[in-house]
Image 1 (cartoon, rainbow over the protein chains, first blue to last red):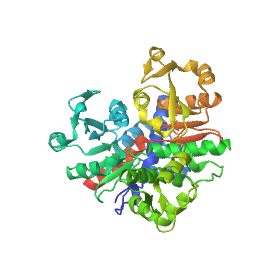
Image 2 (image 1 turned 30 degrees about the vertical axis):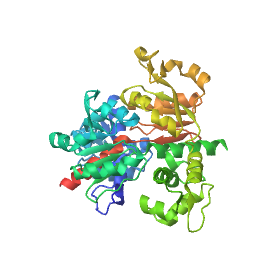
Image 3 (image 1 turned 90 degrees about the vertical axis):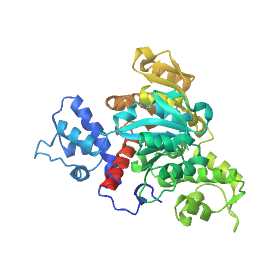
Image 4 (image 1 turned 135 degrees about the horizontal axis):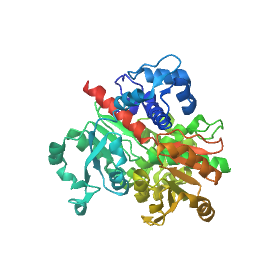
Amino acid sequence: MANDDTMKQVWKVPEPTLRRLPWYLAFIKLSKRKGEIFISSTQIAKEINVVPSQVAKDLSFVKVSGKTRVGYEIDALIEVLEDFLGFKSQHRAFIFGVGSLGGSLLQDSGLKQYGVDIVAGFDIRNELAGTVINGIPIFHIDQFPAKQKEYGATICIITVPVENAQEVTDRVIAGGIKALWNFTPFRIRVPDHIVVQNTSMYAHLAVMFNRLNSLNS
Amino acid sequence: MANDDTMKQVWKVPEPTLRRLPWYLAFIKLSKRKGEIFISSTQIAKEINVVPSQVAKDLSFVKVSGKTRVGYEIDALIEVLEDFLGFKSQHRAFIFGVGSLGGSLLQDSGLKQYGVDIVAGFDIRNELAGTVINGIPIFHIDQFPAKQKEYGATICIITVPVENAQEVTDRVIAGGIKALWNFTPFRIRVPDHIVVQNTSMYAHLAVMFNRLNSLNS
């Protein structure tokens, strides 16, 4: 089973670093818009609420070097960070489950700017096959092997009902998918060489509701 | 600044517990569909890949007691868990930023089943004011104070561009919003009594791309 960093494999870049770098990138881009030319670890640290040594350590994984006193050149840092994070290359993705959430992710053209190119959607419902959402064709899931040969997708976004999450996972892995972006609240099981990221919107809601209740009580 | 569990306040229920409970709930509901009547911590633990003592500890925060040998009664456990997690009450929410992601979240009726009732969307673009998406009215952000009086929303979902994230945050907090669900890659700053959850889709992508590249190299 491979969920996030529970994978046995030792990764070169720690997951917390990879999760912080996009925050740095967002702030650096904002500074560029404000007309800044250079930025220091200390400035980033202050803004993100992380200690400066952590920012420097995180940035040490990225091949970029700062200058004493002035810091990093913003233009170069943005380019290197976007490249390092994989946002500049397009990764072909399928969406499995064109329900409420799946359908709404198909509408989100913003994902393309972050390197996810959704090329097709799949659903078990016959009436959806042959339709097009936001320019993206929807197929019946039985067409997956043929369409995978055609598109050669790397990533599968899982937005099926909980009871189908594992079955779909097994199926797409057998078909050559290398990474699963799981939006269901189900903990899918995958072999060690498959990448999984769980975006647990409901888990975030559970935390939010609990904190709200605690404040009220 | 209050991001997740960096808040100074000591919460009764730890965030990792609150994040795991929805996974347990999803698996328990699946077991119910399969006709099961009882479920044990060991069964949940095996499925979720957590040690049984952790499952028992997590469930100890929820007011439910299991029976020796047979475990928890599934129907009762689902009801108590859904209630504990706040999924059964409706929390009124606004969406700020009706762009690609904001617009797609407005389409996601699934959120309502998890306790989020999106009652209105706000955007800076005049041409969006007066439109309706999935039955939800969209207003110009200048109408926020008046609409907040009318709806009394508790939660604000932030899907604005990075450069507006902090400004919108400050504005909605001043208007009485208690919790922010931040989908931007920007680390918003809030006072201690305000709840923040960050759903960092781009951070998840960064981890996924890096792991994919590591596997290929």
